[in-house]
Length: 366
Image (cartoon, rainbow, N blue to C red; front, side, top):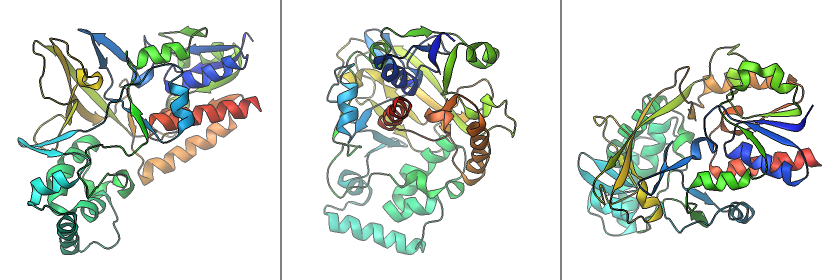
């Protein structure tokens, strides 16, 4: 065995774990199925603009240890996430705040906004929210749910809101202030020069091989290391023994426009059901760009099919039960650790990914 650790996947989880183990003197090999490092946070330069190839990624955390860690590998700018909602040409502030409430109802004080939401919650007869639709109405009322949540969410998840679990929207920011910062985290920003450069520095000095499909030659790769850290999808690892888990996938239409400014904001969500895409990203505004051209990406959400990239686990009751069956198989795998968004079938914010990888590294070194 040539290496102490074989890490399958060069995304944030794999890169962080690899960096931690290499720093501790362990021999590490990272293999990656794609032709680049960085996983879904990968950025590429187009017309001098760092393009978020797999969708917008804004780093935010309240954990100073994580913030200090990422700042070892990149300088972060002061970007503040303030998306805009477009409903049939009407623009609303996101997160939902006093600008949103004033535009929707004409209210001017927090007390008036609270009263309007309470009135609509009572009219809907919701006491204990049982699904996403009821949870949303209880938080922001029927009007905002119908215009700014329902269409967008059903496009994103491909299911009626009444069939989606309430927890998906429990973190929805609702503020009775004029604060347009979507995140409340103490630390927030985007690495200057892109995430790829950051991950490249994390993997400095570590053996990395790209365009390698681990599952095609699993036995040969396993023989190269004492321990395998697998960050791919757990159901594919077991050849879909119990059937595939459900994921949502995302397709991007990216184009370069010969103009300096297309929409005036990094992210605009299209919340009506008729517009086929969920949002448009204008990448230059993540780094306060002044380039003469601009690059935009339209995002289309779809149900995952084999051969596509799985993005978001569908953590409903049925899929969570299926995941538990795969997790039981994973526990029996010798010298193999499952980690990350796909390996653990859960949605992770970037800071949580890094915390999880660092915790695992610490446990391995103890």
